[in-house]
Image (cartoon, rainbow, N blue to C red; front, side, top):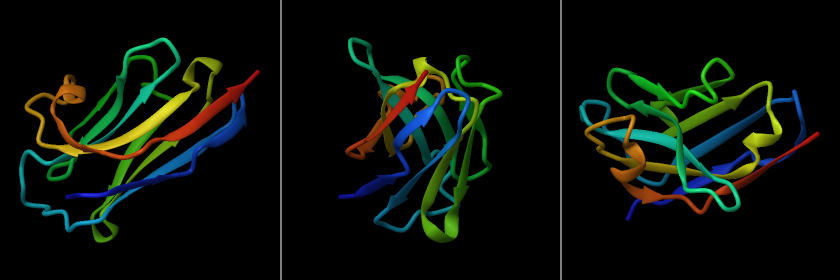
Length: 127
């Protein structure tokens, strides 16, 4: 099975930045058109939601409206790693952030199309 290891979570003040990383244990094929990696989050009492997703081949991206303009997802195929740069963090960004991989038909609905999930990394934004 593919194993995903997330890192970079922690406590940050509102307005600050964090950079999350997720490394996949297996080789990622850059020519697989549907393959994607993404970040999802779940806050207490809330459903898990898509934050940002990127197609490995081509680099098409999707961002949730609540993070668009503040977060940036990127990939490093040589390291089998995806990153999430989070800027201008807000208290409502507090959640457990999960990395996932799969071949979703729709990036917008990727939360339902991922096959492998990481254990999550906690991000707490204090006011």
